[in-house]
Length: 296
Image 1 (cartoon, rainbow, N blue to C red):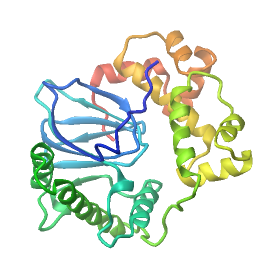
Image 2: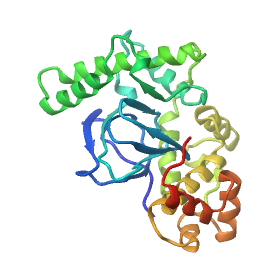
Image 3: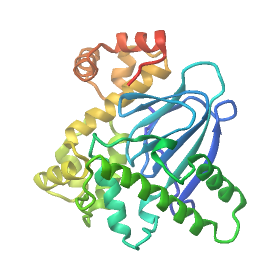
């Protein structure tokens, strides 16, 4: 079973930018997650994005913001061409304009736990700031690699992020309340990769806590504070995300899927899936094959 985790070399490539053409790149982009922030801007066509099991349709001129560790996939809704800009960057290596790097990092991570904040934007949200030009310039800087291009990219991305945070602030986001940065965060972040890699096996939260060199109670509280859900729920979320991926992009039967994703049998998979999605895996597959579009 392929892992959902997508590795990025943040040391050598802390910023990536490209114009994605569905006719020339592997497509559709199957479900994946990473530690980078990812922002996509639609240039042509309509994109169907599944983000943490919710479906969003993006039209030309719209931008979507993916927080670190959010599982997402890209597909199209018809046979027409689909092109979109993709920008990925390591948030921890992005200088804050006021040099408060850890506060800037924590602020965005805190926003990830607020479901009321918008993640889809259009040009109307930004005055005196062209989204199309921003992405075009980012790709140009990456391609040219002219003197000081990294610093210029960092400045431009920081400017966009601050504008997004101001929009969130208008929706009630408290910029003074941020996710605490804890010394053990590196090890607990790596544990997400472990869960992804071993999700088809029997995983006990107690054993994961030991891998992080933490007591069960401390690990459980820390995990919930950091990610807004229990570790047990996260394991189930990863398994269901892989089930969803296999239902959407393969013809494997439920016996194979349940075995590959860590469920004890088909009955267990159907019960858990129905509780989460309100329908059986079979109906979920049929609905998506029939319409290929499910509005949010």
